[in-house]
Amino acid sequence: MNNDQESHLNMQVTTANFCDENPTAVSSLPAYSSNLQIVNVTNQQIQDIATSQGNGTGGITSNKKQLRLNLNASGSDTARKFTSFAKLTDNYTLLGEVSYSESDFKKFTDIEAKDKAQNLFNKAQEHLSELPAYGINEQTQLNLQNNINSFSAVIVAPRMGITNKSQATKQLANLFKTAGIALEKMDAAVEIVKLTEPVFYDGYKSARKVIRKGIAKLAVKGLVTETGDGQPIKGVTVTFNLNGTTEPLKVVSNEGHTELKKTTAAKGGFNIKSLAAGTYKVSFKKMGYAEQVVTVNVNAGEITVVEVKLSKNSD
Image 1 (tube, one colour):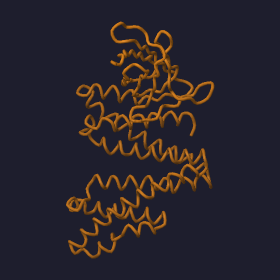
Image 2: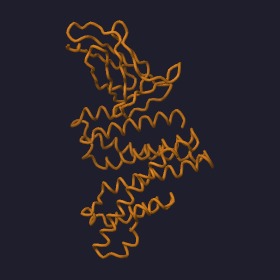
Image 3: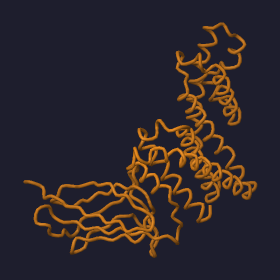
């Protein structure tokens, strides 16, 4: 991927994560869930292809086994439930079309597994109104299609990476276009809750901003003091994590890639010169003080000020 595509992918992932963490705010919005699902699946496909471009087929292969297991599990589960439906309704024509065991899925080739799972999905859609009692519903169908799409991406991506990288480039362009269309529809739906869900609305708008690498600069300025007397605290470890993750961020500096951890200076302050827009969980730790974790929203082109007071541990 080029720098512009990396910036757009970062925005798409940040937006999808933010929406996934706020299901109540978006659950009633028209077509929102289906468009969010498109963004999530497309993001995964883009990341798979990008890994293929950068590392040959190694990155795809390492992920392929798990995605095949996911497909086998959801495909065989749908087949098992669908088989019960066909038997109990005496639909023997359907029974011959959907009767696949978990063992069958393990024996299928990659293409066969994908095609059999897709056939199960399509057949289930035809009978969906009759299937909830058998454990097949819109959510299980969505999960099955998601697994099919994800596995399809890792089947195609290595082959493109080996035979024709230009095809992968075209594939990426199409995927970004697909994600862009879905996001535009989500944008339109979010306007409905501008007044009723103002916190969510502002957070969504912040996540949707594209921060282009090497062009847009952000800054966070922080100050850590003691509760009570307000004295600055030196040596506090400040760790930034993108909301919804547990691993410390990586940032680019002149020295290379470093973990996004800061230590407060003598006057209790710390600065971060560049950080992508988004919502972050920030922890503040120092021996002798109670740890504190706060949520910080970083907006494009703005300096975010973070002021935290730590309390001494009681002996």
